[in-house]
Length: 289
Image (cartoon, rainbow, N blue to C red; front, side):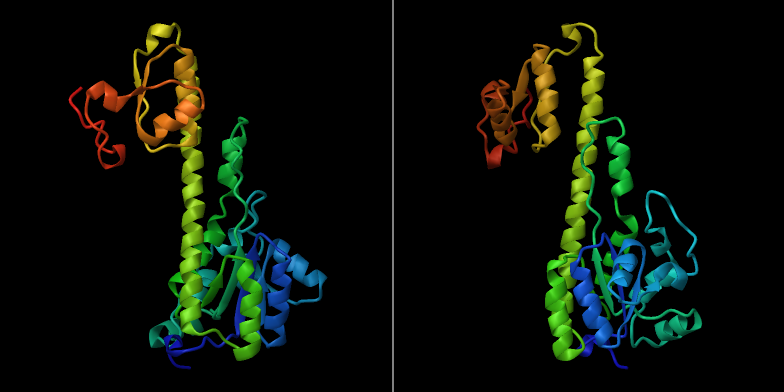
């Protein structure tokens, strides 16, 4: 077959999954018309079947069709056989032997859409719902495919589906430079997804700290507070609670500006220390005072 890095990936099998979007129907139809076998699962499989597109259930392929979690229906994707389909290196003799010995077929195309992250953590159940909405199997599969983009075409942005379908019409394959570009986009999108998870968890921590502060008795429990960090949304709530308790707030830079716009007065750290705000305010807190 040759090394896929030399040019086009020959498309024989494709996996479509994650949070279903109608654009999947177009690329699935194009791939199937080109003789590509479609693997899918869950809502995506049902929607494809509804419009007459046949797909093989990835749970059946991975030999775990009955592994179902009522919250996370993507558990069948956490399977060595499924991930082997995107990770084994086409043209590598040992990998080819291992794939053949274990009944692993190559997923030459992986088109997925990340499940929307639930970020409303205001209710007591909010954090649990957010954590349950993290699309771990799809994220892992997408990153595995992106890592092996020399052999796999992977997409996590539905906007790329139609473009890819047109390329498939023209070439029955996608060249390496395009695969690399799309792989970079996958890493960018999944990194942003994880960054958002981190931000929500930080906000949740700030809420817990707020509740602890609110349970303190007497306004003398906290004397002074330094609120001078890389600005995060949760900082405003914390600072407002402290201000309502008549706690003097010290801050600087963008955090100070944001708190002032929210009507929360602060004492400028640079003014307090008498040290100029050099290097974008990053050194004003490095002072013996």
